[in-house]
Length: 239
Length: 127
Image (cartoon, rainbow over all chains, first blue to last red; front, side, top):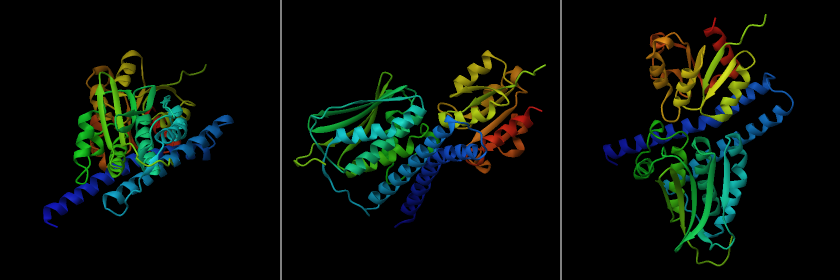
């Protein structure tokens, strides 16, 4: 490996590490602050069970982030290949919706799921798709300006799509493209991305690519759409 | 006679963290919350505030820009500001020796600052 390549890899690792570290600090800071208040007896009665629930939500968020980054890292370094099967995308979206409703409620947001059971299955890896969707959705919950975030599951020609839609211009197409273009070389420094989105973009784009899918984002007017697009499966068995 | 509580503006974009800081601070202070730089400026514009606690990386702007904005008005030159940062002090763009110049009363590294410590910082700054 030439000197320049070595430098690029080092920069990539450092930038990615910075993104991961900064975003991981948020759930950890929440855990630290809630735990310290519980220890100091600063909550009473019903507040205590709510704070315990928040500890759980933030712990799971941190674990999800770590799992996502490790999986994306293994894929990027060719240590793991994903097994693709026929996946019911509606089920994945329903699970993500159920798992992240609690987080959304704590940020005064509503997750609105729109799907149907009649959709064709997609060629995907169930866990990777869920990790990808959860990762992006939790980033949106923390950083969106919308009270409602829509999760739309639909068919488009030979593809099965999940679209996350909210209001906002901050998460621009240019930002997404810039992150995607730099994959494998470097990731945008955390400060140039909207809060809590760099890691979600990175994990989602790597995992979608590994499933022969596409990850994209665009805005029309004040509506922002983030799309996960997968090929329809030709297998008959649904997982 | 009961003394009126001093008013603290807390600029914290994360809802859950903001709730915790508000719960801890509201026993001793009247707390106003802003989620963005613009909301913070609007609050300071519309009512008297005794101190600002601001996150350093908020959505469209950052806490340092809020600091510049506030310091650009004569009325707010002396308003104490506590910076809340996810970055440790060594990575914060303003060095400790320059804090006084920018009117920074104190600096809190969020991952290691307990809400109860924040209360003490505010009490100290408002003496």
